[in-house]
Image (spheres, rainbow, N blue to C red):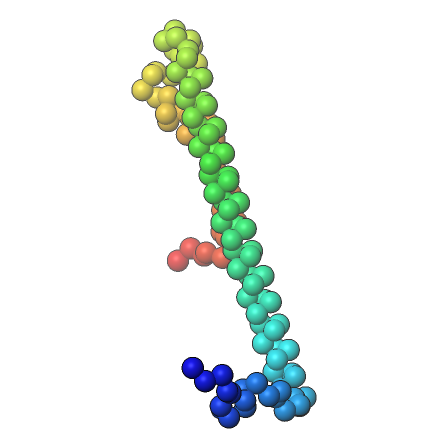
Length: 109
């Protein structure tokens, strides 16, 4: 194996010619675009995980409601106007759904 550097490799190792103002402006625009892209990606990921956390919390609340209602006797359920078959529906109705924040974006046809 030859340890010498060939001329093509030497050209790659040499410092580049000094940059002009136009190249600096282009590099600044590219850096700004990358920062904006990274910020948008971070916001979307944050929103995804926030939504996932909220969905898991709602699921946990429904499960706890079902467990509590299932622990009641038939007489106690009748007092509040429920049958055993209506417990899951009552649990789903007890957890508030998030508001549609994009309602103004979507317009009725």
